[in-house]
Image 1 (spheres, rainbow, N blue to C red):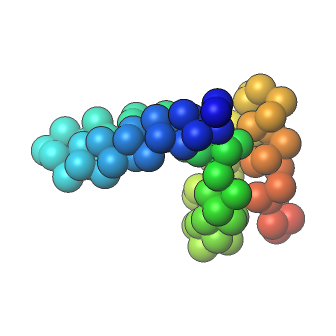
Image 2 (cartoon, rainbow, N blue to C red):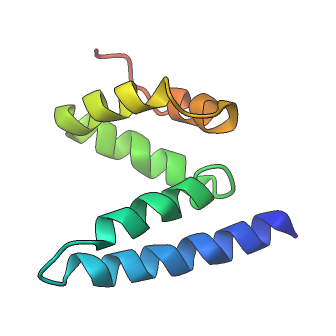
Image 3 (cartoon, rainbow, N blue to C red):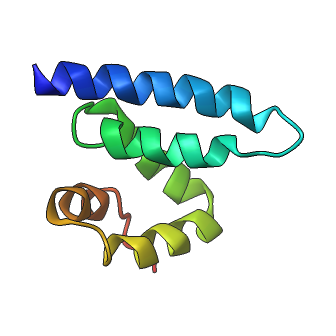
Length: 87
């Protein structure tokens, strides 16, 4: 039940974030980050997408590496799995 609720909240926040990015002031990035906080531990496809993004963008990979150390344990474990070992 919790996973279903977390997925619904995550996808709603993601939808709001995508719409928010298209506005003149891109506040949608905040909603996208909140959505990822809900979707990463509950949806298996999201870590795969993050891993693909990290392979393509060195900047994103460096930022994610720095953030991973500050995250709580469930997120830290999942984000470490998205590392591809090229740092």
